[in-house]
Length: 424
Image (cartoon, rainbow, N blue to C red; front, side, top):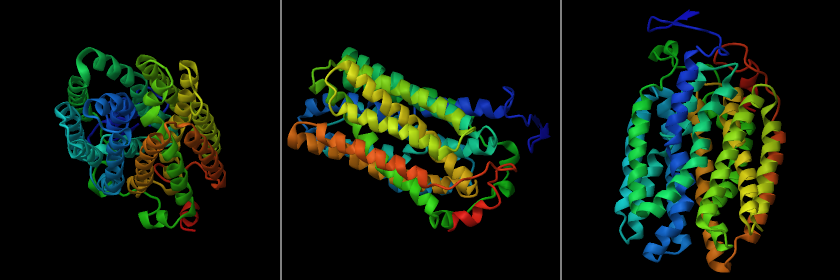
């Protein structure tokens, strides 16, 4: 047991269910469930067709809204990371959740002007990562060392559960009350669920004092000079184009081939279930095996899923393809923050993680727009998805270039010889 700065004792055993860090993990997971990376990303394809039909917009034009949100995430993630490294996370998370919920709900008032759609998505992108993994992984890294991989997987199951149930909820609500009221209801859910739970999200008390917020590890500049860092960024960039393109167009892709809207939503939910499974399994594997090899295998599953979607003409094929993509996505989301914490420590963790999100988000903006443009030009997604499957295999292979690391011996630190390696 250890006395914290707030005067109560903390059990040091991370394997104990009484360890307070697990309660923080669960609360953070619930917040991610209603955050940008879950609610917006996994329901976008459900809203795409109804909104495009309502206003007579092309799919490329509507997909561009996703791109604008992703570019906003790209621009704002590094500053958010810097703030998270300097201040208690709740000061950043609470206003971001409030703005995101209000913005999402405001889409119920969408007018027949594309700039209106784009403006709302830009606002959601600006605050997006303040409601997503970037904010919460920093908090959990202060609580966990030996069980960090599992803690991250618990956190990310919130997004995975959202991917599993939110598309079905959105589709059912759209059929029952229309897309406008569905936006309003889901925006309200963000505020009702997210804001109260953020009060439970806080760093480990002994690290919450300003004098103790500088942990060991590489500086942001040391990290950015590292070949390790740029391999991680490259993998994320390549994979993001494929994953976000497939996610944003999954429902239209399947309905164009004769699958009913409800079954297309079921395929999206299957992807969410696979994301959930992938994150739980990966979290346990990361605490036992070398993370880049785990990522290599998971990304091969994602590549296979993308290839299957290129020719999927039935619900079963769509479910299998989406499920394999989800399995790979779920694992990769766990692997990235885990690798950053192991190779570079916690000193500039959120700043470096924010930079990786910039790469991921830029690619996430490119993927859906390319998918929409190719469809508008050719009437098919097949050839592009085949190429994206090949690019995912290339990204998986890059993971094998990462060097060995050792689990930190001390609390919130990486191995002593990683600092030189990080600056090579």
